[in-house]
Length: 300
Image 1: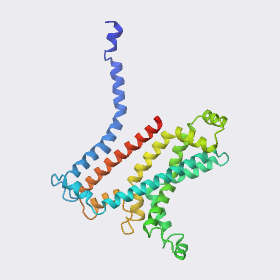
Image 2: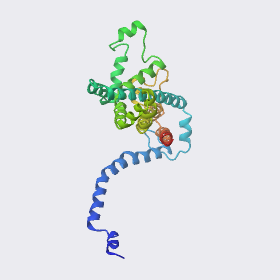
Image 3: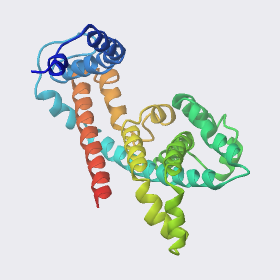
Image 4: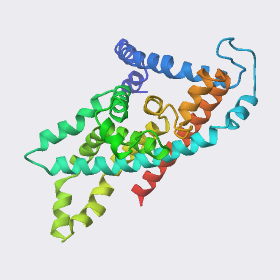
């Protein structure tokens, strides 16, 4: 065996120090994941399998009753349907609008800096703060448009459809700038040579957009779609502040149902944990399906 071969398998002090340095750099992230994800997940799994009242504590195993009670809840199917409807509408509107805004600020020259800032500013506001702001704007009593709303008979949050679209408008206003920024990064990553080749071939703007921009933007579209779908499926603050699940329990999301089961009415952390596990599994399946769909299109 040569000297080089013998030295390759030897753990030298320099290698040991390098490995230790790497572990020290990874340690904060590992602790963060352990404390804020792994341990809470383990606790939720234990709750979902236990008879766990809010105040009395763990009273023993309770499988599969918790999951049966979760899916038999009278608001379960309605909350799932409403959450899916809200997710589809929000995702389609946000993706289309953010892509349009990104293309606008990319091509604009004189007002490019101003438009980018104006579109991005709302994303700096917290979702709870934005929800409180829109709650005041929508108020038929204290809102700035109260007299106009009263004269025209407008109630933003007084009907199921009005409450849904009013909340969607809030979310679009809050997040369009953030997704625009992601889209803009993806657009700027497309080489100009590709567009120049398309123009030389005589492609129209629509043909260039459909055959060049969209295929090359697919990784960015996949990222924004996953983020938007995940955020919409976990919607809570906006509906809790704006509608409280009303009117007539028509805007209850699945996360609101979890909160209600855990801290209102039933005060049952076991059933709430079962609902949380169901939502987690659904998120994993949906995200895997989205990623595979985008990968399959990329391969085609």
